[in-house]
Length: 115
Image 1 (cartoon, rainbow, N blue to C red):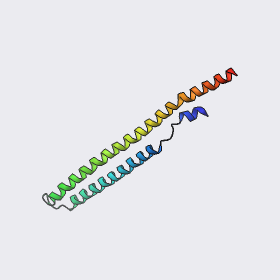
Image 2: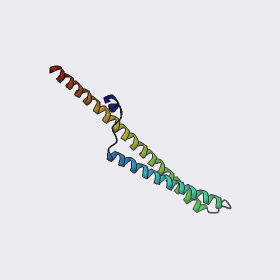
Image 3: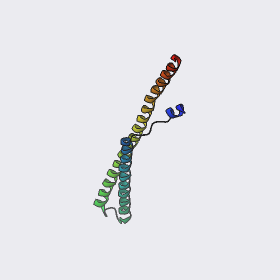
Image 4: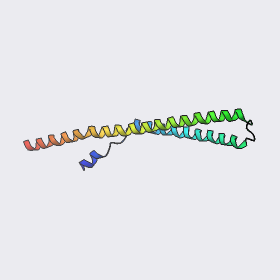
């Protein structure tokens, strides 16, 4: 009844859900780009025949892969922070709602006692 309703955190707001979805989409895109950059790097490594072969392409590919992995790592961190923030806001809302429920019950009890 009342106790279980108070225990369950309120659902995320539409804005919070949108922020979570956006962060996840950006992260998925960044992870995909990082995987593609790593695949390209692996492909260049396989094609090499000697130490100087493809050196500039390889250096570019290493730089691109490193940047893509760094970006994906940052995006994952941001997505985790967004999820954590939404969860904390939910907890804060449920904590804020509890005293109101308690006060309302007390008022009703007092009103019944007076009757």
